[in-house]
Length: 188
Image 1 (cartoon, helix red, strand yellow):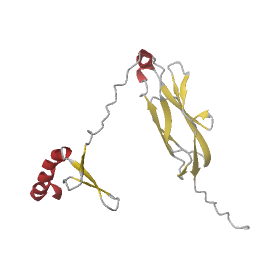
Image 2 (cartoon, one colour):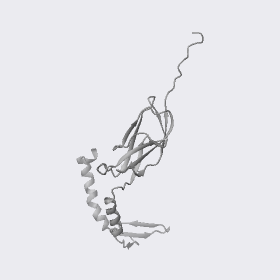
Image 3 (cartoon, helix red, strand yellow):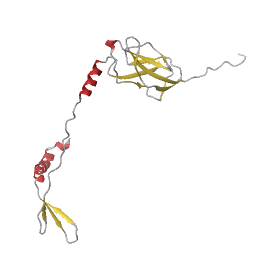
Image 4 (tube, one colour):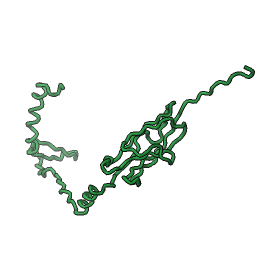
């Protein structure tokens, strides 16, 4: 951090001390014989002093909080089934996964956090059907998934198994290398 060296401060302090005096400086306007206008802080012959108005500033008024927004905020806190969002963040929509074993890791983001104390859980759906029992986690691992294109969704369930909120569909493509097994030659 060379700019904080003593040399820097010796050079910058005089300039910093001049800043307040610049706001109090007088400005003069002079029209030259060719018609061009010259502005200066030094009075010259034929120059007129110009009044400079103070710098215009604006302070925004505080934003009023209405009773309706207070009520909606408090009702969200009491609504045990309220979730703002559930989203599959891994794999990303349109992702191509190269995994010969067919293992697919899934990560889910939700807001607010899963209400485990209320018995809420998440069920993962692939190609329209549940692939695992509902769980109280946001991370899933699917094993031995067939190669091809698949669609994922996640749903939050309440304690009775009713769907509270479902994520948008995420499509992914699984590539698994397939090597044909050579057949024995005829007659062997």
